[in-house]
Image (tube, rainbow, N blue to C red; front, top):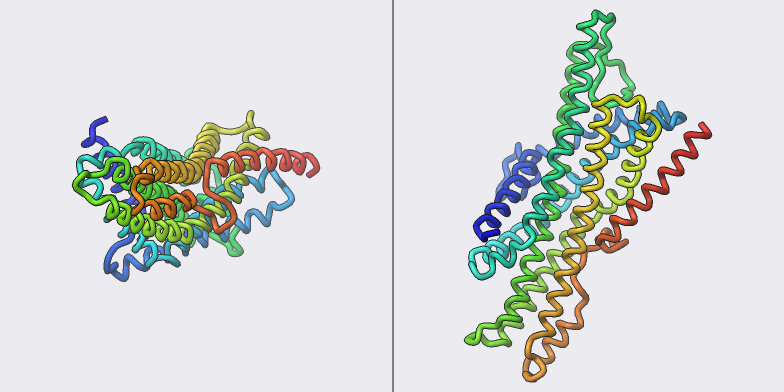
Amino acid sequence: MSGDRKCSEYFAYRQTTKVLLYTMGLWPVKNPSLFYRLLPYTCIFVSSVATFAILGFILHHIAHVPILVKGMSIGTSLMSGIIKILCLLIHRKEAANLHYILDKNFSAGLSDKTLSKLILSGITTVRQLCWTLIPTVFLTIGVYIVTPILNIIHQKRHSIHPVKYSLIYPGVYPWNIPYGIIYHIHFIIETLASITIFCVTCGVDALFAYYVFQIIGQLRIMSHRLTHPNPQENMGLVIKRCVEEYELLLLCRDSMQKIFGPIILWMMGTNAVVLCALIFQLSQQVKHISVGRWILIISYLILKVTQTYIYSWSGSSLITQSQKYRQAIYETDWISKPDTMSSIVIMLSQKPLHLKACRFFIVSIDMFVVILNTTISYYFLLQTLAQKS
C-alpha cells in the first residue's frame, strides 16, 4: 500500500473519531464555547434517566433470570457510556494536553517522507477494527429504536385497542407515562441516550486505539534514529533526544492510564456479564427469537467481542513495539563508544512501555482471554440459577 493511501486512511480514521466525539463535546478543542462544554452533561443526564428506568426493570424482575438478563446488557452499555464521559470530563485538561503532545509529534513524523510509511504501518488494521464498531453499534441501537415504532404501527394496522405505547428500552419508571407529551419526552430522552451510546462507544474506543497508535509511531521513529544514524549527526545528541522523547511518552502513558484506566477496568468487569447474558438469551430462546432479536443479539455479541479485542490488542501492540525499541537501543554501536555506554545501559535498564488499568493489571491480549473465560464461567452459573428459579 502506498504512503499516500496510508495517509488517507489515517486522516479518515482521525476525522471519523473526531466527528463522533465532537458531537458529544468530548474532542479536545481550544477555547470551547459554553454550549460545547455543556454537551457532555446533557449526554450524562439522558443516559442516567434511561439507566434509572432499566435498573427499575431489573429490580422488578430480579427473581426471573431470563427476563432479568434482557435489561442487563443495555443497562451496562448505558452505564459504560456515562463512565467514559465522566473519565474524559474529570481529566479534561490532561486529555487536551495528551492530545496536543501526541498529535504534534505524530504530525512531525508524517511530514518526513522517510518516516511516514514506517509510522503508518498497521493503520489499516487499527482502522478496520475500530470501524467494525460503527455498523454493529448502529445496528444494535437501530433495532432498539425501530422496534417500538414498528410495534405501534402493527397495533394500529390491526385495530388493536387500546394501543400499547412502549418505549425504546425495557424500563420501569416510578411514575406513569400516559400517551401524549410525557410519552414523547421520554421517547426523545431515550433516543438521545441511544445516540450517546453510539457516539461515545465508537468514539472513545477508537480514541484509545488512536493514542496508542501514535505512541507506537513515536517509538518507531526513535528506533529508526538509533538503528539508522545520520553520519553527520552526533550520536550523543541522538541518544539525548531519544531519552527526552521517551520521558515524554512516559508522561503520555501516565495520562492514558488516568483517563482510560477506569474505563478498561469497568469494561473487564461488565463485558463478560453482557456476553454471558447474550449467549444465555440465545441458548434459552433459540426457537422463539424473532429476526429482529437475532440481529440485535448477534450484532451486540460482535460489538462486545470487538470492543474487548481493541483494548487488549492495542495494549499488546504497545508492549511489542516497546520491546523492539529496546532491541534497537541494544543494536547501536555503543560498546566501542565509552562516552555513550552509560546512557545506553540506563536506557536498557528501563522496563518496556505498557498500560495498566488502575494499577490492577497490564492491558494486553491476556485480558481478552480472561474475559472470554469469565464469560463461560458466568454462563454456566446463569444456567444453574435459571434451572433453580
